[in-house]
Length: 85
Image 1 (cartoon, rainbow, N blue to C red):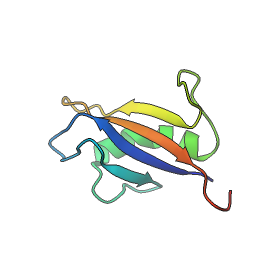
Image 2 (cartoon, rainbow, N blue to C red):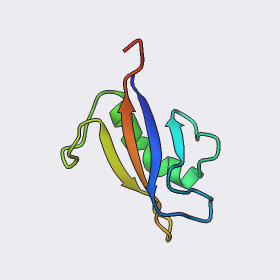
Image 3 (spheres, rainbow, N blue to C red):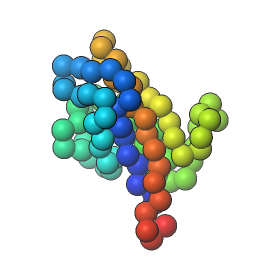
């Protein structure tokens, strides 16, 4: 299973997310990540973790996802292979 990193690429919000913030996605909300953002990103991260991709993305190891907050924060999800896989 691949590791997926969520990085803020634009926007800011009342939860404190800022451009450049990074989080390792897993089964639980990463420390410091807003739970609304996590629940939005989780399905996309799962696809990447298990080798899937999205046909609308230019790169198979990435996905761009916007949080539903009224002050949108945009995250880039990037698949990174782990040493054992």
